[in-house]
Amino acid sequence: MLDVTRFLLKQGLSFRGHDESSSSLNRGNFLKLLQWYSQRNEEVSKGINQNAPGNNQMISPAIQKDLTHACASEITVSIIEDIGNNIFSLMVDESRDISVKEQMGVVLRYVSRSLKDAIDALFVKHGLSLSRLRGQGYDGASNMRGEFNGLKSLILQENPYARYIHCFSHQLQLVIVAVVKSNINVSDFFNYVSMIVNTTGASCKRRDQLRQIEHDRIVAMLEGGEISTGSGENQETNLARPGDTRWGSHYLTLVRLLSMWPSVIQVMENICDDSSSFDSRGVAKSLIQKMENYEFVFILHLMKMILGMTHELSLVLQQKDQNIVQAISLIESVKDQYQIFREEGWSTIMDKVNTFCELNEIPVLDMNDNCLIGGRSRRRKQIITNLHYYRVEIFYQVLFLKILHYYIR
Image: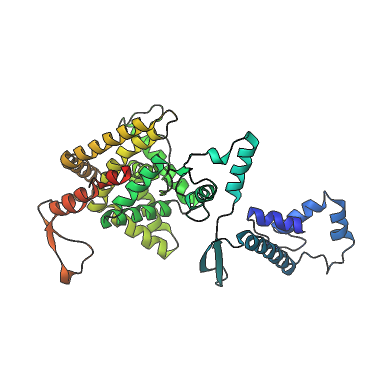
């Protein structure tokens, strides 16, 4: 029974079934797996089916809970022993389960020496000396570059000459996204993008619905001659979830959101019409209103063009035959592209945004009209023109070239 308990816990599977009576066709994972195990192990079969009385077979719900608690206690002891005197952090959260009971979760976050031990074993196997190491490079994860127990620090404790260098292409993505998010409008935009991706991908049903709607739309456009087909073109896809630690994920998300715009809107409308949850319907309605706002469309096109420039650079930096001289040259080239886009790209992006809005029936703003600066109460309102707001407050601020100056430094 303990082996069955360990297996279910390791796989994260539920124990209980809706009906665990002897006449049930599906008595739950614990009882069904125990039955399967007893059929293949004679000792287990005798202990459960033959020798044990009906009221002492150790398979009741209470016994199942005791077994899981015993395993949890042993795992906790193992974790505490592994932490030892190392530095750790504490996270606590609580949420209601399906029975409306508050459940508290406690997380102790720490870094074990398993990574360092694996490196040591690799060096010993191949006859390498850690003292001869002069460079190390990883991504930005805390278990890699942590100041206290990260792999970088553990190696530096033994060899202070093993200089650490952050992965260039990964650092580029992190810096670009972090700096542009210092603009409150862009930060707000990415928050809504995450909400859109989460809402449309909240369940398999919604993901399948989005995929089917997009498929039907592409087929209709192909049949109407509006688009062409070919290798790698107009393939079935889905919205990608943006993540700060994944190369190019923000760019990919924006590209797909633009290409699947009508399908995403339709899924949101279906949620508004059909969802049984008032919260889901309210969220979908507000997201539609946000997506059909001129500012959202403007920032969407702006960030797609900005991240598109660095996306190509990021892909080149990941090539195996790349060297530092070529990398610096490419960075300078992207800086020049940013400068040209900052000086000459206003009309280009306005054409793209206005064309997109007209195709999707989104009201196009008159740049000479006045607007209120967001984030201020009407008592402290500051009136400026739309042209000043979009060109100065968003376009120029986001394209300020300290983005790549900071990256090179």
